[in-house]
Image 1: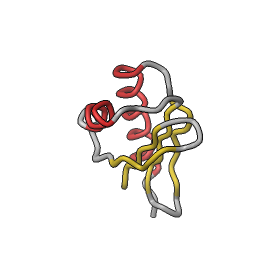
Image 2: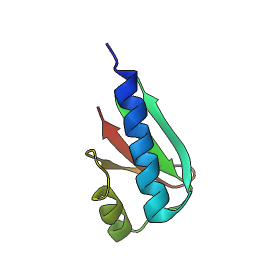
Image 3: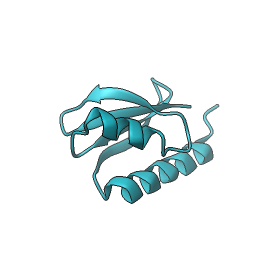
Length: 78
């Protein structure tokens, strides 16, 4: 069973970190049931150093997920 309260809380934490570190630049932030993970795509592309810095700020484990149509992508497995 999916714990949506935990997912919503994690979504809020991720949004808070992105807004604090980079400003409002979220293109997509959603839970993917098939993947059982939260996916984040930004509206800008980050350099490798910026990716590493941002990943270290998240309260949950994040992984770089490549380049999307609008910007850098991250994934957070639940």
